Image (cartoon, rainbow, N blue to C red; front, side, top):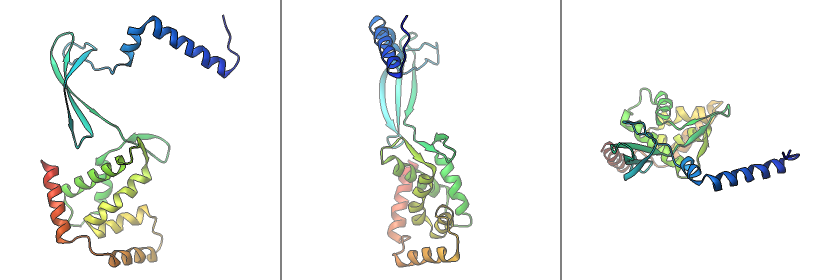
Length: 204
């Protein structure tokens, strides 16, 4: 029996065992590499894909499967998970509902409806996914809310920005208000018409 004496020896021994297992039991190795999809009817662990269609703006794939044991068909939904790294270091899946919950407090008393918030959360997720990364910091999620919220309602934007940009004095608010006044208003008729079209598309 060989007793490895260093990390390199352990690694070498592991790769030898892995190689031997894959050569001696190739079918077992292939079976373990396949995703486990259990038939809801007979509980068999193998099925074949009949049809695949993208849904939810391409963030999810809906598959039609057929069990290779009982022959019955069923649907599955596969989606890519965007993980959010919290301050504690723990991770959790990105949630549009949490974005809406956080923004809703800033929108209290403002002319913002549920459809507006749903569209905002969708835009935040699309922006975060556009970089192609699998994990983002929680602070990045909060900052990604600022641009679409500013277009939605400037008062709600100021409330939200005061938290995520850590406003500590009246001068911070005055400076941000000055920037808002310096730029053309984003709540123009053209923008409202574009938002209406996006809401119509989102509701279909």
